[in-house]
Image 1 (cartoon, rainbow, N blue to C red):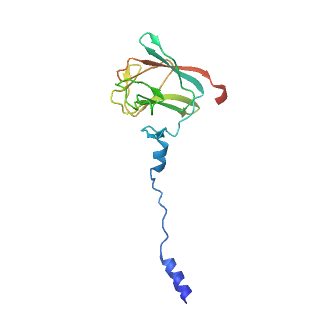
Image 2: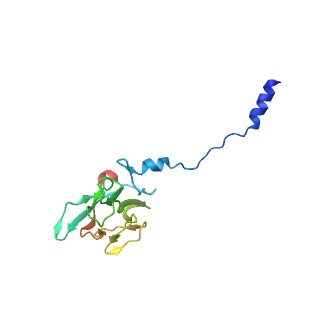
Length: 164
């Protein structure tokens, strides 16, 4: 009889239900760069580019070294050297100012720019971008950040053979 009582007691308890609420732990680790929390998270359609994209950098009449954009799916632009992939050491540029993101759209992978709610704005062909929205970058587009005089010209190069 005692075994029946113990079985009935264990049956009367409702089993603990699983908790599927996100804890935020994964997001905390995912959004770190060198141990520093960053505010930008790549979208689900992030993808490595299939073409050799570059940013040609101009300061007045001086051309600086171009920046290759075919190695990663996203590049953070800002003045914090611990966060930014593309460093712009100008006071009008936020620590984490904007991001260039390659996104898969149907059969194409296209570059986009997003302003990360910067204080002084991100500009595409002299038009100020609305914060937290993706804008497609086309070859020969000019990007500027804050009041910094440097211009970044996006150029689409050859198809990458190893990513066909």
